[in-house]
Length: 121
Image (tube, rainbow, N blue to C red; front, side, top):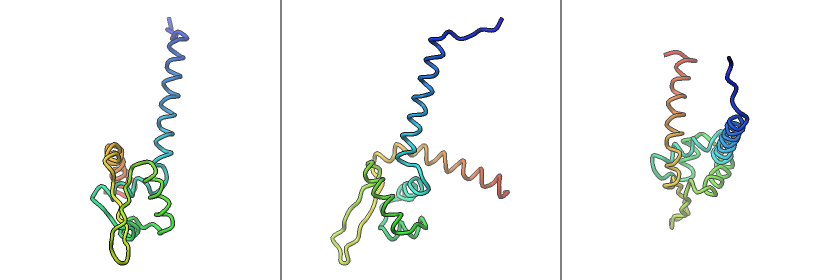
């Protein structure tokens, strides 16, 4: 005899699934796209100036500026204007960005494995 889940169980599962989808969408809204997690991974090594970030990530200054503004808006990156001539700006990962450490590490591990699979060892 097949057991069929009662309607309350199905509704609970459906709600859990919807909450999971919303949580994933919220995450992607903050760190989605081509550059945000790359920038956060670079900044995990320490503060970087704007041009250093641009060169290291291989990203145009215009796009970099937009991405950094969004990361700063969400509290993942801090921006410090240095009292130098010419004026320089440094960016650093905030303590809050550490909440994404497991995500970045997991993506790095998966990316290494995937590259090995596709390109070969």
